[in-house]
Length: 356
Length: 169
Image (cartoon, rainbow over all chains, first blue to last red; front, side, top):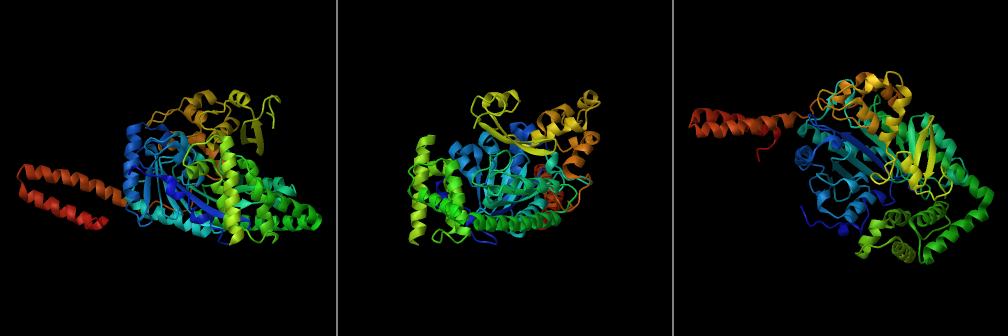
C-alpha cells in the first residue's frame, strides 16, 4: 500500500487524547502493550532482511484476518518518509526505534488509533491498546482482544515455565506493560516527586518521561508503568498499577490543594502568565511550550481557567511536536522556524477554544 | 545546562541511569556520552536493554569468562553478545543461557516462573494452514500424475481443513 500520506492524520488526534475518561485532569491516557514473538525465528535485531520479510508476511497476514483490524490500515515504514515516521512516533503509533530501522517494519492501526500493532520492533509483534483518561481496563481489553484474535493464526514463541519469550528478558512472561500518562505539577512543585519515585521503585513500578524509555521529562508529564512482567498474571498487573495510580492521584490532589492554600496568589500569577504567553507569544520551543501548557492545565484543574477544555491542551501536547508542525505547514523547517509555527499553532487552538 | 561530567560543554544527552538501585538523571555532552559508550548517533536514547546488560555485571561477576563463551545451539549467539546489547538472539537462547539468566530474572521480575495467560490454542490455525499448503502441493502433483482418486481424497481433506480455519468463503 504505497502513496500513504500521514497528512490526513494531523487534523484529528487519536481518540485516547480526547480528554474524556475518569480523572482526566490528572491522567491523560492509559495504555497496555503486549509483546510476542514468532516461533522458529530469531529475534528482530538478529535477523537478516529475508527472515524479517518472512516474519512480516506471516504477521501481517494474520493481523489482517482479525476482527480488531477489520477496517484498519497497514503502513510499511520503508515506504514513507522520515518525517511521516516521526509523525507516527509522536502519536505513539510506532516507537522511536522505527525512525532508524524501517526495512520490513510496519504498523497496523484502527481508524481511532486506539488499537495498533507494530511488526518487527524489538519483538516481532508489539500490540497496543489505548484509552482516554484513567481506564486501564479499557486499554487492556483492546490489546488483549487483539492478542486473542491473533494467537490462533501465528505460532508464538512460548515456554512452559517462562511464558511468552521476548528479545529482552525484562518483557518475558506476560510480555505486558501497562502504563498511564499522568500530569503531576503538584508533586513536582512541592518537591515530593522524588519520594514518589522512590516508593514506586520499591513497589516494582517505574516512572519515565512522556516518550518512554530514555526520554526527558517535560511539562511535568510522566509515564507510570509496571516493571515486572514475569510471575504476575495480566489482570493482577493491571490491578496493581490501578491501585498505585489511585494513590498517585490522591497525592497529586493533596499537593495541589496545599500549594494553592500556601501560595494562592503566586500560583494564580503563574497560571495566568502562562496563559498570556500561550495566547500571545510569537515563538516557543517544545520544552517551554510544554511547561506553559502544564501551568495552564493546572489552572484548568483548579477551576481558574474556564474557557480552555482539557481536550485542547491534550491535543496540543501532540500537535506542537516537530513532525506535526512540519506536516501542518507541508514543508520541512529548522528549529527556529518550528518555534514560530508552534507558537502560532497554540495561539490558534486557544483562540478557537476561547470562542467556543 | 552544562554536562555533569566535564562541567564545561553544554549537556545534550539526557537519560536516567540506574546506579546502585537508584534512578539518577544524567545530563551529558555528546563527547562525554560517547566516552561512556552510549551510542548517541544510533539510538539517541539509553534503552532498558542496556540497563539490563549493565546489571548483569553486578550479579554474575565470577566465572565471567567461561560463561561468556556459552553458545546458543540454535542461533549461534554467545552469552557475551547478550551482555553487550541486552537482547537475546532467539527464543532458544532462554534454554541455552538458563543458568546465567536466572539471577537476572530474579532481579528484574522477582520471579522465575510465568503466571497468567497460557499459550494453549496458540498457532492452531497457523499449523493447519501450513498443512493445507503442503496438501495443495500434493494435490497438483496427484493431478499431474493423473491419479484422480487420490486427488479427490486430498481435495476433501483440504475442504475439511478450510472449514476448520474458517477460510471456506
